View 1 (cartoon, one colour):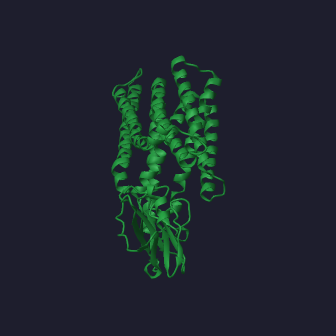
View 2 (cartoon, rainbow, N blue to C red):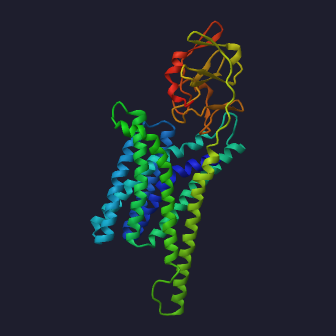
View 3 (cartoon, rainbow, N blue to C red):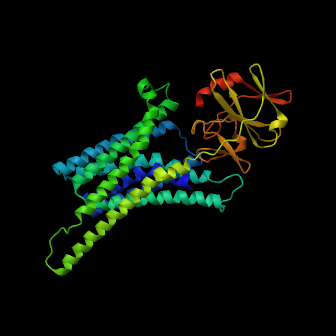
Amino acid sequence: MSKNLFETVQSLFIPFLMTGFVFSQVKTLNSDKVKSIFYKAALFLAAVILAVSFLREKRLIKYNQINNIYLLVTSVISGLCYAVLNWLYSVRRLKTSAFIYALDLSGVIFVTCLLLYSIPPVFSLPFHFLGMYDTYFSTMYLAKFTGYLAGWLLCFLCASSLYKILSRSSQKVNALIFTLLYLISGFISFVAVTGIINSYYRRKIKIPSGLRKSLPQLITAENVIFFFAIIVIIALSVGFFIYFTKIHGEYSNPAEHRKLKAFARNNRRLAVFTVFLSLLVWTDMTVIKKIANTIAELSPSENFQLEGNEIYIPLEQISDGHLHRFTWTNDAGKGIRFIVVQKKGMSFGVGFDACDVCGDVGYYERKDEVVCNRCDVVMNKSTIGLKGGCNPVPLASRIENGGLIILTDDLQKEAYRFKN
């Protein structure tokens, strides 16, 4: 439950905040007719995003990481345009219809690209909650799905609160808040694009060696800078609360006075509620994240026979359908782990105890299932030994003389995947 809550909030929090901001500007700057058109277009785009998410999960549309680069780069460019137009509106007071339409359009493109990038992976999470021996009504599945829904709800409430506060704030404050959030979002997008290029397109797209080497530090900075978005929302809420400790506006009778007092009181409550939500997100990104990333202890490595550059494992040792873990130590003293799982008959899934997505955290056995130690995804045993997703990195092997044979040369080729 904690892992699904954390992953959902981490993926959706900032895109939802940006969506709430754009909606607040549409409400503040446009006529009722334009707002009606915008809301209908927003419903259509929401349907498109959900449809794309579903088709991607079912692999009915072609998808690869280059699509993410297009989305991220477009979001950065359109977000910059939106920030500049917001400042022009707040400083120069440009109110022509063409200017407002350009502002709305850049905002729509910005949040649409962010949501198309962030929602599909989150949308697919429930399809991977179900273990081999679980049902949709099992306690484990319901707990995971509860955490998943709680993450969506928390992000939605944060976006709604920000929408209400910005709808009642000055345009200069709005422009400042968007600029700060855009810088945070832009940095995260930059790190994501750099990571995608480094992982999938380093031969086609050259990135500076210094930038490539500093990628781990950038990822760490990305995790830290996420908290600045929470700080921005808390600071805005505190300022909003302080501003409405006094009554603003003129009144000519007690009824109007009571109305202004009620308005100020409701705004203070809104500010307190927003701070509370922000602290929940902070807790999710610290305490719950720590719980979610707790790593299960791996089973001990088993013995094998080493003959020259060949590792020999008797078939009777691994023919029980369970996960078997082995470690070979190279000349540099680094332990390279690999796992073997019997599939059917004399068919075995052989792979490194690491994957392209989660690194060398390894896999463990739970109720006769093979589970990723970091993302809690249950492996389909029939796919172990095949490339893709969170599957173990494939390791070449052959059956000969009643045993499974693996070459140490093949292990050495992937030694870089393991830290120790």
